[in-house]
Image 1 (cartoon, rainbow, N blue to C red):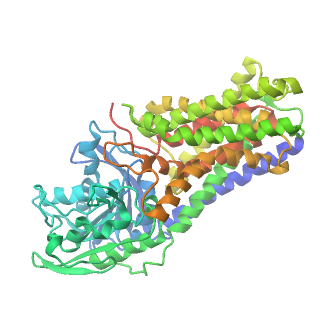
Image 2 (cartoon, rainbow, N blue to C red):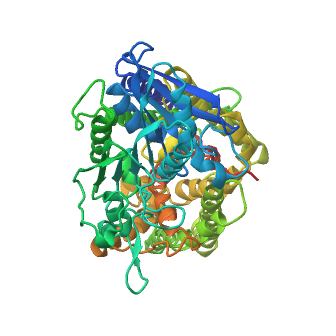
Image 3 (spheres, rainbow, N blue to C red):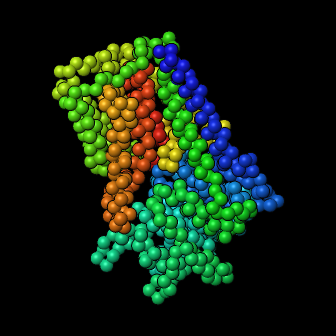
Length: 608
């Protein structure tokens, strides 16, 4: 076991170095090597709620030389860090950037009525920027992804109603532009503002229309719609107007100003657009044309990918820390009873009947998780709760955990007990005192790991993430939603027991753990593959949202993207900890708490 301890010490040092490296590089990218000052703000809005935001101010922006400024917003169920491509690239080009946490998201206040105040966030950001002495009030732009562009459109309408118009340019990103007035007549609500649209060809939610029979037409047909054609014709009735195309700049004099309309059409899906260099180049190009970059740089010259790469280095360091720190703790006097006498070795390869049980149990779990996912997540999401996403994913996790428990019982009574399977010897059964000590160790590991997350956030304004997977710091009010985490316990504990106590054998050799990890992730791999395979080949999704009142299946499928890495990573972490402890509950408990925290801190919370 001395070798195990030395390996864990080395792993701990490497993990801390990786997380520190993440913070240093991310900070350097976000600040353009010190040329941009970045800070986190919490301010009281004119609407009476508090909003959190990142403010990035280039050195070139001063009271003497005020700079153009842009409010950027994330989409539904996300947070301000998701807009990193925007705030990194725009600040690098000399724009002052305010990246907001929308109401009920991230660190902003949970408001009494989401649907009234959620569209308000971008406009409150505009008002905040307009009061900063280093901002040129004649050159304020707004953009947001998905729900963020719902807020952009609302900001334009609020700006129209204001005595002083502040918004000069708007970029709608993965949402639909306005093209009607309050009576439903064709109109130009944007007036003389320059407006562009980044519309993903394979968007799951926007750019839709109906055919002559009332059938749903998805985003591939967007350029044929009244929405696109009226927008590009500055609010004219498309029936009598010129048919206009994507990627073409259309200029027209409006209110005495030469005004731009343009639609960009990257052939990608909705969530990928805020992680796309192509989409980012369009955003940069649009604001360079309309507001004027202080520091012009080619739109294809982008560095935000380095930030994302080292954010993921932080994720790797975080996972390695969990394994190494948990292993080292069992060498302390308090937790010594949890240490295995020798590193746990896999069981021998079972006979043909045992191998059949192995493969069938993995396949059954994967099939159940895949078939049950959409209905269970929809059930949880439709409940009147503060966090529909957490309830939906938690309910699915809990049911998958119960299925795994039943599967293990079937194996034990149908095969294992007759062939010498020892529940106590494999760590399935243990004294209550030892189980309590395991829970204490798991909680200490999670607390220290998240302490590092908070430290990296405090010193570097960085978190550990990859695309939609995020391990981030949070404000104290989020702790009231900790009960949702209990829903994740059945799956992650059961999965750790199954992977380590029942399935840790010589089937697959050294790849046994990888096999188990991949099977656990099958639902998160297969459902998106079906959804987008059908979408790309037919221009229609396998599971669309037929009406606003029907289940939001496209959204539920998107939730699976980060779960692929979560399921694979948690399985491998549990196997690593089990090797030195012969205890599946330490990693199972720790994984459940961490995944639960990731879920409740990266979603929308409604007032209940």
